[in-house]
Every structure is written in C-alpha cells, then in structure tokens.
Image 1: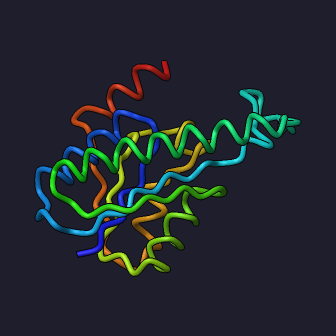
Image 2: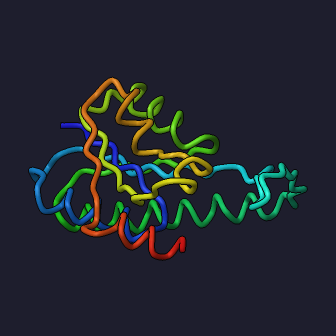
Length: 156
C-alpha cells in the first residue's frame, strides 16, 4: 500500500502520524509530504488584501524547516517499520497534495484536520475538505477529539 502522509507542524499532524503507525500494516510505503505555502500576500482582519515583500532568505529558511520536519516524521515511521520517502513542495497545499498523490499513485492520503469552523474556515480554507473532495484515491482525515470545540473557544 502506498500512503501519502500530508503534514504541517501541528498537533493535528502528530495525531495523523500516531494513527498511521497504530493502524497500518508495517512495511507499507509512506511518503511524508509538507507543502510550504507562499506568504507573498494575505488578508488582514479588516478583509484588506496586503502584499508582503519577502527577503529570499525567509523563503529558503521556511523550506529548510519543512525539510527538517519531514525528515523527523519519516525517521519515526522508519523506526516503526515503514518504508519511507520524503517530499517538500512549494505552493497551494490543497492542489499540491492532490497532485502529488496522483503523480505518486498513492492508494491513501492521510492528513490531520484543524477543526476550523465559521470565519476561520472561510478565510483559511479547509485543506482536508478540499483533498477529500478532489483526490482520486481514498482519504483519511484524522481529528483530535474536541478539536472543533477548542478551535471555537480560542477564536472567541
């Protein structure tokens, strides 16, 4: 089985890793993917678009951090008996995860859900929802119990 584990540096991705190890047959091929999203623009709380002029060093540093994260996660999977490979891509996480899974011929995509609701979900989008709707393979969305409730409380 070929599993694409799409991660970010969050407790939700840590939970996805934990679930993968707990419920997947050892020896499966797992590719750990992190997508570095460009921060060249953003929308402020007042819904005003802004452009960020980035120093090239900042983008390089973000990619380096992503590679370190992917390497650490892959190491945990190898210790647990999985065959792993690593990938870091730059761009829109939703489309990059879907495209990577298709190009790599993944049987399953596993990713964590932040549990955002309301305005946060509208502004930030739901990567897990987009992947589940558009991927050409099965998708497992890993949730942390009460994550949605915790996200609502922190947004208030």
